[in-house]
Image 1: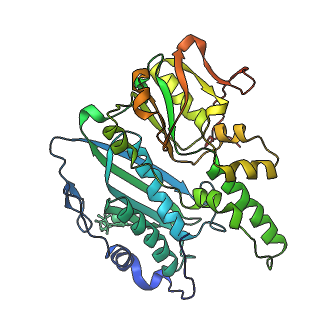
Image 2 (image 1 turned 180 degrees about the vertical axis):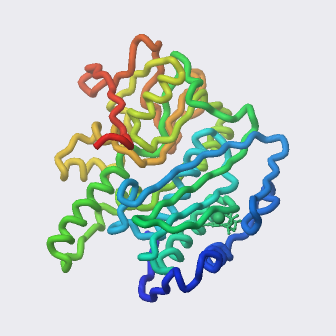
Image 3 (image 1 turned 90 degrees about the horizontal axis):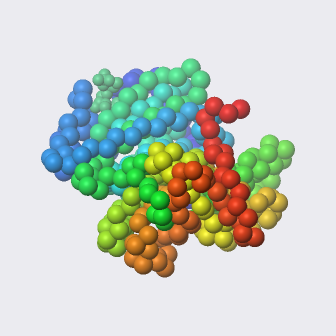
Amino acid sequence: MLDNKENKRTSLEQLGEFGLIEHLTKHFVSEQQSTEKGIGDDGAVLDFKSNKVVVSTDLLVEGVHFDLSYMPLKHLGYKAVVVNISDICAMNAVPTQITVSIAVSNRFPLEALEEFYAGIQLASNYYNVDVIGGDTTSSQTGLIISVTAIGEAEEKDITYRSGAKDTDLLVVTGDLGAAYMGLQILEREKQVFLVNPNNQPDLEHYSYLIERQLKPEARKDIKALLYDLDVKPTSMIDISDGLSSELFHICKQSGVGCNVYEDKLPLDPQFINVCEEFNIDSTTIAINGGEDYELLFSIKMEDYDKIKGNPHLSVIGHIVPENEGLHIVTRENTKIPLKAKGWNAFKE
Ligand code: ADP
Ligand code: MG
């Protein structure tokens, strides 16, 4: 876990907009060859030579996407970068730059924004991306964060949602559902804390799940891993809204269906234990829980031997013709239609 310090409170008015921007961005240095000009002018200048450029943006709104009562600001900064890097990775591209824009109310002291930017800096160092700009403005209500990520790839490597073909195998990286259960634990502890603020929670045996929620990582390693295995994914997407929802995106855009096997879903032992403790079905959460930021992709069947046994990759099913639809095959060998139940910004 990342630590945070919170004693001094310097008001934002004291610095003014330009002082604030200067203060928050002075530590960023550009490392990428493609960055010709970073922070400091009206626009950044990038040069990708013959490579294609991939761009992705996410907007994070306090109270909708994050809750500051259990999300430390440093983690929030880190996660805001990661969710965007994940999108670039899901195009099978290499992330190179980000911009960070924030709307912030003056209830935040400078020290809170320093924490937030410490998280941004940690993630940008870890993922080797340059922070090349952004915007800073005030907000009447909560904190709003928009990160744009830029990446590069050779044209032949870029992988779309639309390339899956009948008989292709479906593969996921890492494991599923842990971030969702991490959130359930944090919500539960928040309720306990509201009732009894002196109660210090013992979160030791939930550490993996909480880490998956508060400090997710993007699978920047997978592009190189597949390259080394000589496997070209035929379609790819990152799992932000839940496996089922992402399967629907791939299948719809590729004009195919799929069968996914319950017994093939990769689950962490801690995840299984906590599902039992909460008395909820682990398969349901593995399929519908969001925010894992793993990658889901398809490969040609003949590439199976190349990925077989790789500890990062699990084959969870295969592509079928569109008219067969999307199904999960249970351990008892019954076929149940999948629902695109993933997290949806407009449901109540
Ligand atoms: P402008 O008036 O053109 O919007 P600003 O004064 O807002 O310029 O920004 C000055 C420089 O600082 C620009 O390079 C801009 O991209 C960068 N910048 C502004 N806000 C942020 C931020 N929150 N994070 C990172 N860079 C920022
Ligand atoms: Mg500006």
